[in-house]
Length: 224
Image 1 (cartoon, rainbow, N blue to C red):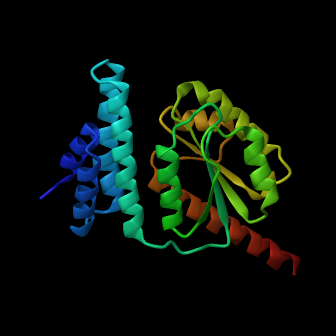
Image 2 (cartoon, helix red, strand yellow):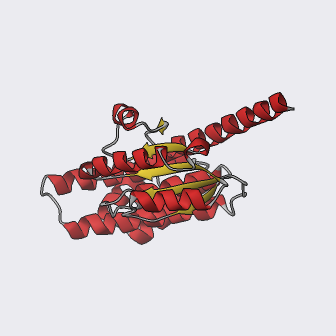
């Protein structure tokens, strides 16, 4: 019977078909998506990343592991089924200069699983594109910005600054995350929320929207 360590090994080895089967088996055993990601998929990706940094594997190995990871996420999303819709929307995107989408895709999936409608802007997203997407849709309440490369931290800060000064700044909250981001860096950027994992980001997003709704209801009651 497969376990989470076995899944991590399959991810590391880039065994796409076996990752699919293993992920399905773990879900059928009652293992939660959070555990599969945190204790299976991510350790496998971290290990292949470590090997690549130490010149112990090739870029092709990294790409195969990334494809296996995407397949695992696809199985989890399929297992979750059709997500309920919410009138509030979240914009997600990977910051300009960064072409990585695995973390961003997981955040989008996790947020959909808690009932939020997600607008995915993709990768290498400039600050003004985030702003246009926010301003054009009054139902957007949250913006989640992802990065994997340390070199894109300045672009992330610029994006946060731009959003904080856009016409819709008063109705949105900004979440940041990714490998090079820390809670301290998030605070220094002026972001509202930082989380370590995608599922934490989804829970934080849900709580933020609930808080904004409560504040709006209180304001409406006060005016009445």
